[in-house]
Image (cartoon, rainbow, N blue to C red; front, top):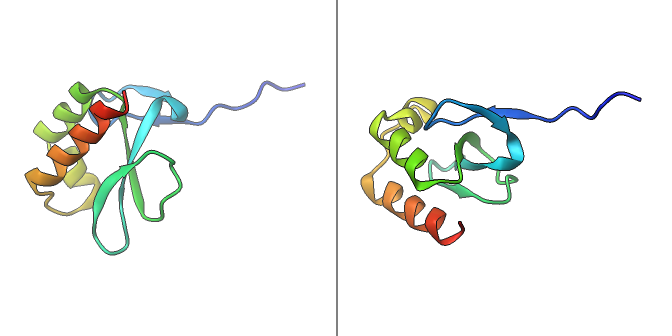
Length: 89
């Protein structure tokens, strides 16, 4: 029997490849809203980040989410995502 394949994704903050279950999905909905997707099932374009606020800060500083979603992301959204991430740690 073959071992089960584990889906890997890259963290936008630190750039490490990790199993999908260890990361949190950040999604840009078809309406253009950016938010954390803790379930991983929301529709839209997704990018992944580690479950640490430090990786979210790195992605914010390097504007990696803005590049992934091809749009400017306001500071309020980053602050809300960081607050939600620290509450769920």
